[in-house]
Image (cartoon, rainbow, N blue to C red; front, top):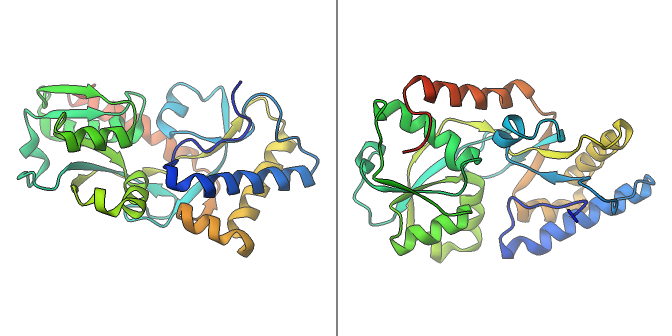
Length: 254
């Protein structure tokens, strides 16, 4: 059964206690409002904006967009970084022509959609990489980059920020080569089956947790310092990025 409340997107082992504390605070505050946080189905989770609007918009409703205090984030936006090994001689994205790209998922905004647009603008409608390897996760992409299985990957800047924070020595093995266009941060969502009143209560509780000085230490670990009402138009622009790449003759990373 799917967990009723989860934080699956930024979940390094070093963040487990803070994520658990955030969810515990959520459940406690919902309980005070007589809302059962242990119900079947998805009451609260976080999801990538690109697949949400492309495939799952009829399954979830957005509650809030998080703001992270990590380089590359501006207000409610984030972006992706093209990562290479620290000793890679490449100076520009164009220097990676013919190399091997590692992609965490074809449904990933930061791992596929955002870098696809950047590549479309320089690929001239032709294959840019010698091959594309599916890795399954951003951190796995970094691990395979370190091993030399791939030459470059595109990582959500929040993932990179917390990786660098909690694993500084491992982070020294990589460097940022380029960054993508901005994108709205990964939204907090609930199932479309959640009642309107419960969804409003959920959003209210999220703002309470983020703004409460007593839970500020949780936000500090997670680098989460604010929330805002989701800007639907900003999320819709992710589809425009997809269309632009296709118009440039680069509908998929290749």
